[in-house]
Image (cartoon, rainbow, N blue to C red; front, side, top):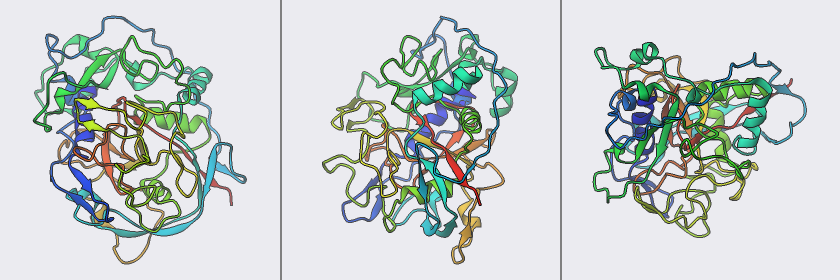
Length: 393
């Protein structure tokens, strides 16, 4: 599964590949290459060679036993601390212009009821409070069960090295050599043992001094567990996209139609030559503290860039084609199935918003309509989440 994660991560970052926009407000894609390989961590793990340059740590972390997670009501009468009110409304969901990724088509009308949304992505400090209260252990901190992993790869796939089945996650590692073939994401994604939310860049790294950065290396189950403990839930894809529009009328980006490369920068994204050199001209090479860039019209920070955000919906690349393009689709909750043709064995959820690795030359997924599949048991250092809550009636 984590091997799939690696492959999937590549896909994730690669699906953004060559989705370019111009300053006229018309979206344009110059490549029809999908950003996902056939799998996520499962594909990565089952392709690992312990003699390769993939990082395989040898230290061992203690695995805690999770306590029972408290349940609480996700409906509130008054706006909870740290959240903002998103008023009800209707919008056109999906891509406009000459986008090549069919998953964003066709555009369709959606109506959503009002709800509360976290003003920023869940931070390291907030996630630490959850872990300290519950003893929760994230997916990346757990050893990998080969019997479960086998279900997510083609029959007959050989078992990966035992070292690779230790706890770990995927880490973006810029290659030393110049990259000319951007379709081979194995050149910059590495499966790294003992990498998790507390050690985001490898086993020897830490989050000291990064309490206000978004928590990363979060899998779908981890986000669900936190949301339940916090008395909230994950947003639907429709809620997330509607909120990302802010108070603007059908913008390309959460901040409007201003080109992402124009100064001053509106989000944390990749400047320079991907994947070798991130110049960090926006002030950040990896994650930025939440709220480092201006909020959108609803008061939401980092709805574009910084980290991908997990939603509650299954990823189904044909889902939009099943929806009405004339009558409003009211509070859609996503497809009943998970369907991603590049990897029919694993289950995927929708992620939104792009990350610090998005770049117009490779991945321009800081667009409001952009979406990617995330293998549900995969985690990586550019994926996080935020929560929503219902309004009591």
